[in-house]
Amino acid sequence: MLPARWYGVWGLSADSTLPPLPDIPVYSEVDGTVKSLSTLGQGQLRVINLWASWCGPCRQEMPIFADLQRNETDVQFLFINQGESVKDVRSYLQSSKLSLQDIWLDSSSELGPAVGVAGLPATLFVNASGKIVELHFGVLSGPSLKARLRALRETP
Image 1 (cartoon, rainbow, N blue to C red):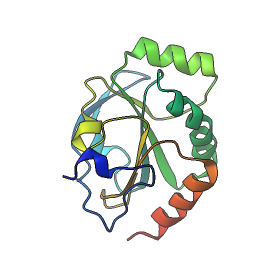
Image 2 (cartoon, rainbow, N blue to C red; image 1 turned 90 degrees about the horizontal axis):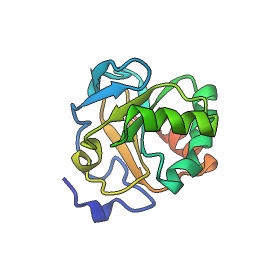
Image 3 (cartoon, rainbow, N blue to C red; image 1 turned 135 degrees about the vertical axis):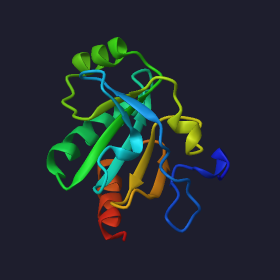
Image 4 (cartoon, one colour; image 1 turned 180 degrees about the vertical axis):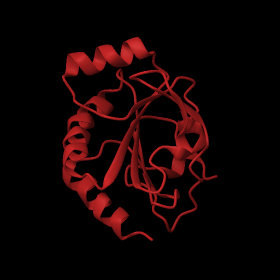
């Protein structure tokens, strides 16, 4: 695994050695269902965003993700909250008036360290085979995220 310092604002691409998508349990914000992260959206292109309500940069990019989730229906967007309670997550979502689907909780914050990320926000781009093809640390703008989605669609 690469040290966290290599995960800069520009991200790592498939040319780099990226860790596999870890098989950790995540909990549904909606009903408490427990699933393995590796099985969520299996067989689909996935964008997995690691976030927290206290993270200013996370809050900055959330409306962009919400818009893309509505419009980019060939990609599954998964929002994995890091270390917060269901109550805190729901309170944030209600106060921000964000309409997001697929909110999951990683209550023990295992995902970040498992992929070499020490901060938030972080976004994983996963191909249909379940391989992480890019990891981006930091805020993504709308144009940058759309460019990464185009690249993800072209990844075998």
